[in-house]
Length: 221
Image (cartoon, rainbow, N blue to C red; front, side):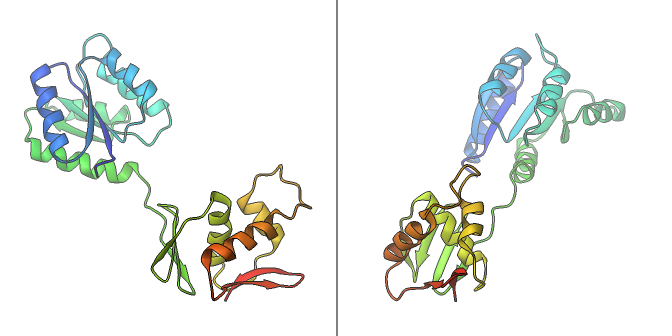
């Protein structure tokens, strides 16, 4: 999970740095803020998957930081930290929109386990790979392979191929490809689909797999 970004917000400097160091060993990308105001500044410029948030912060309270994260509408998950063990305190934190709660003192191994779990929830599952006729399309990585050979495609070529493979052998009309792979301002009478398919065939190589169905569209059998 090396590309997962975590913001640690904790006013106890030694604790904040210890948490950050531990999470970096877990291959997270970690930033640190020592008060609520600094946390809001970082949240304004960087998209984080998880915020490890102390509730009792100086300058701007942790509750206000949590509200700001929730109100932003992002998929950022909040793990709230507090020294208060009372049930009502935990309930209050969760009511603000925090996704999880951890009472101090805590074991760093438990904290990292909770961050891992929240990070998985923050990111939707990657779309599955598509395959047909020896072609493998990886939507998450935007990569294409034919019989194990990598094929470099432009964005439009990739989009057209993905639609044809996704169709599972059914014919896809030029109008449907225009609608799915181009924006709404594209000229409906353009020959851009034909040109894109021609380039796609050349890059995929022989034997040809993208077939033209006259007067109907294109398919990969």
